[in-house]
Image (cartoon, rainbow, N blue to C red):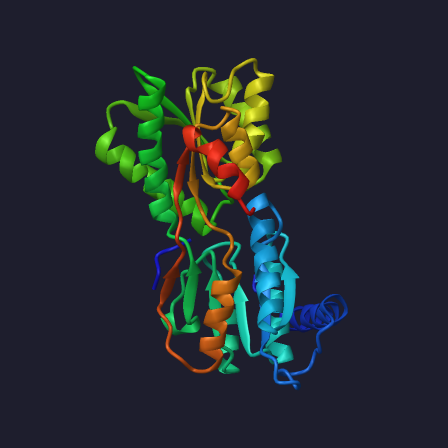
Amino acid sequence: MLNRRNFLTAAVGVAAATGLAACAKKEEGGKGGSGGGDGKIVLGFSQVGSESGWRSANTTSVKDAAKEAGFDLKFSDAQQKQENQISAIRSYITQGVDVIAFSPVVVTGWDAVLKEAKAKKIPVVLTDRSVETSDDSLYVTLVGSDFTDEGRRAGKMLEKVLETAGHKGPVKIAQLEGTTGAAPAIERAKGFKEVMDADHASDWKIVVSQTGDFTRAGGKQVMAAFLQSNPDINVLFAHNDDMGIGAIQAIEAAGKKPGKDILIVTIDGVKDGFIAMSEGKINGIVECNPLLGPQLMEVVKKVKAGEKVERWIKTKEGDFTQDQAKAALPSRKY
């Protein structure tokens, strides 16, 4: 089991599934019956939501890759609510899709619905985020990033940023966390703390930490509160670019210079993040690649054919500093 981060009643579950099935037919133009009568692979995909630029790019990648592969895609947006994803997955089970894929809102609470999929012999593929389950066989594989390592990379990035800035003295860090209970929020915080504890226990301190829900609005609101309660913050670690960009607005509104008065390290690597970095407002970005669509479709083909796949298929990513931002910006695809 990968170490990542109520139930509806039967009547509500059936009603929601029926509604979602009808919605899928209307919005996607696909058939709502079991399997693909025309021979196409039918893929049911439940997305977390559209909370960030990263997520929008991820959704586009999945939709484009499914079209290119000739799949019949049933797509649903959970609007960052686990109950919506569970309803969507039950809808896909009712429709009898060939494979279910989803990017889970949170880490826990999936066993019941995944057991329902297994009972119907519908394989499940996780994308971007993993889950904690009581039975490893409830899903086939995870296609996505190593969030703990991204947190470590952010810690190492901060070392470079501090050195480049010539910073001396205590490092007082504000941390903008992702959605509470979500795997990237849990693991990015964990990886960053590993670097702190191992190499900077005496000089780095997280003085304030709170979720901004991976949104710009959340980042702006929470950072404004941070600056009121802790005006001597000199570093911001944001779990994604969008919260960092929102925080920049709050920093500027407080009369401070982002990237100078407060050094900023973020994770994701969306285009708007690179624009902010090219303007000197973000000091370093750890990439998390959202373009998982083609990789996911290849995995779905193999799973549908009964082929074995690796338990965790990791994505390739890089790290970027201010001096690399302008050169890298034209090639950013998201």
